[in-house]
Image (cartoon, rainbow, N blue to C red; front, side):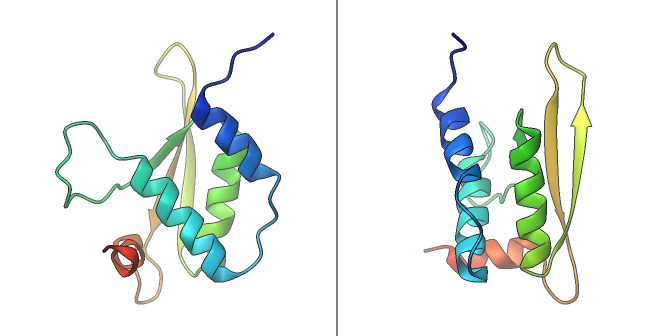
Length: 106
């Protein structure tokens, strides 16, 4: 039996939930990225990427970013013993990912 971490279980559950409204996608994106804070980072430092071992969840985040009007890049890294997927939100039109995150900061 394969042991899964809590975050892996949450991501697996989220993959079962279909995307519905833009607001729901934005809420999931903001939550995912804010929970992915980096150790030692200042509270005011917004995350620039999201890392996951789940290619399916990386694809979901890229799709959601594009659905809310931002572009995104998913990149696979094999620098460690196991690979990781890194999702980078890219600015589009007049909005950056930081702008989106700041809408929910309170």
